[in-house]
Image (cartoon, helix red, strand yellow):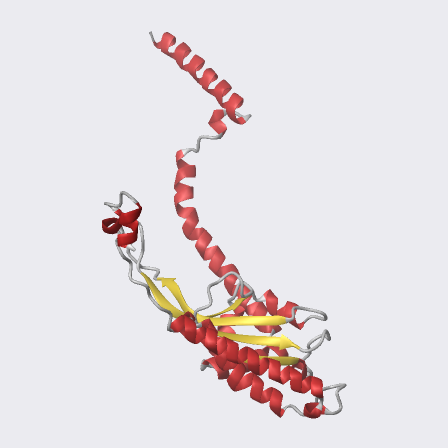
Length: 273
């Protein structure tokens, strides 16, 4: 009897191995994990998190070592504009996944703009409990982060840096080659933020501008005057559009079924009308 069972077990193992080879191209015994492997797979995520945290710390320190006068210019402008300490801004920047965008912005013929959003972002607590429906307790928290401007919803404040030329940005020319500005769209009110930025910041700055490059006449030049008029007109149109949207008419929904239910002939339609 023992010999019989051994023969059956051997045949069964051979068939399972053949089946595994047919499906996966290898023996099924190489696919099924041993108990020791299962134990390792349970411990692995914790080890992986520690390894990732270690790598992240190394990356942060490498980035911190790269910080020079150019980065300090960016950090100081952000700290002043967003009311954060320079240390907070620095920690945020070197921890950001898009840190390389700063280097691309500094490079010769690099990115034309460098954007930062400062707004509420859902943050999940490490000890957050999972609800019966599978969701977790996520709390909104203000966060500063680098962005391309096209992947996240804009609901807070945008701090932007714009290049004025294609020259490489250095510590000595960063203040001349890079312009800084803020764009406030709190609660997602983009039109109001744009209107305020243009009317209260850009237009007064343009009208105060004395050096217009090749245009020696400056503000007396007819083309410059036409340009400023066009900008003024655009802001007026923007303001009207915003007010129309905010004061839009809300039509009350009416159940017309009670009016058309008994319409049988043209005279009924005339009476209903």
